[in-house]
Length: 159
Image (cartoon, rainbow, N blue to C red; front, side):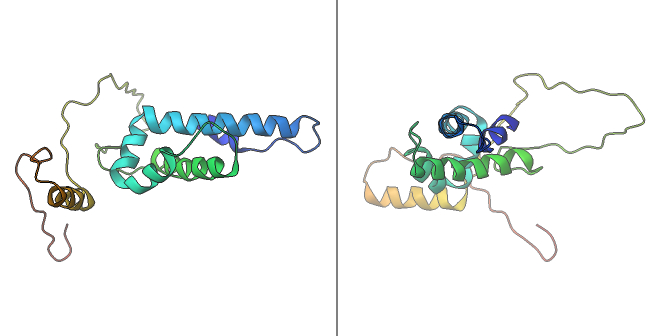
């Protein structure tokens, strides 16, 4: 992540090759943002929370340095930064376990792969809506969610 932040810094204007170097850095930045979104859980979390930003930016992102691609990469980078810097859970992505570290003792923790023991999928409302729309368009039974539908209720002061 820190590497991407470095790539967004513009080289000094005093250097003769700065415009060439800036173009190379922009191309590398675009490639790296696309790679992160396509090959890591961050891209899956982004598709989960905001399918529009992923569809409108990643699917049209090309490894070509132009204004449109820089803008698309910047939009995706803003989400990547938020996801990895924020101590929050987005769908399945982020901390799922909370704890306290006692600085008076020496401890260490190493996450072993795969750290995921079990995975459950909870549909966002937009996903259920989309399934309904697609089901109305086709008579096919190809897209059908299975399993129990659990309703979550809120009471005053509690979620």
